[in-house]
Length: 331
Image 1 (tube, helix red, strand yellow):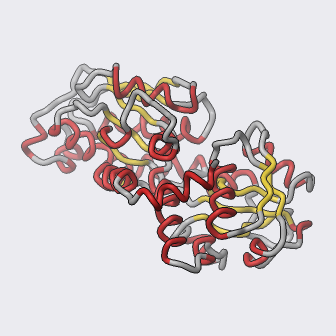
Image 2: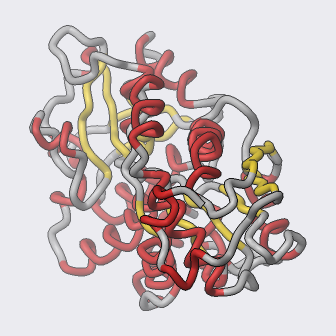
């Protein structure tokens, strides 16, 4: 084992080796999307931080919005740490929101390796709309585009409407966020909400500059992104007037913290989980990974496995009256 590996692991864990093994990362989406991009980024660098330097192979397992991968990791995957999954955060909280759902996995029982990115979701509106002040969202209808019902582009404005009494009118059915931002540019719709700032930076790279066809209207987060905070983009959260409104939004926005979650089966031994978490943390701090991400225009804001585990558990342990507010909103 190399010096860099030894530095990342406790001596008791350093005896465990994956030499000669292959770690598979199953990706709950098709190739080319954000989930796939982060999975392959991690796969390129993880092996050198795992004792024994195993090969790490990404494979796409799309279907059912990421549920197939979650089910496979929970029920069928090897329990020795050689099988890792990455899926969408919505998959992990949907069972607590959708009481009619009967998934064959329990998100709170996954062992979380970590999250490669903490996303800040935003609302963007075009200049033609004339909307500048966030308070206008409480006074005047804003027509926004969305992808499929149940997506973040649908759920986030729905929650704002229900909890804050904003006036977003959602037109869903667009194939993807790129198609929505194209519609925003054509003034077919006035904006889009529930889309990641990292996505907007790619699709509307001048969104914070004068002269752009659209600008970031609000951050759908409790703290915001440093770039957006510096630009003075307000938080939707700041429109909350009561403690209950704040509690509901804090619960709902918690999923932003694990935008790219990596999961392990529940039965993986604790010492293996600890070793892989240490390797994941070292991977996310690896200068070569960071240079790779920078070259791709990708933000890397990781969370540790322990942090993600605690956030997911807290969401499942939340008072039902708070969660019910979100359930009612997204219906």
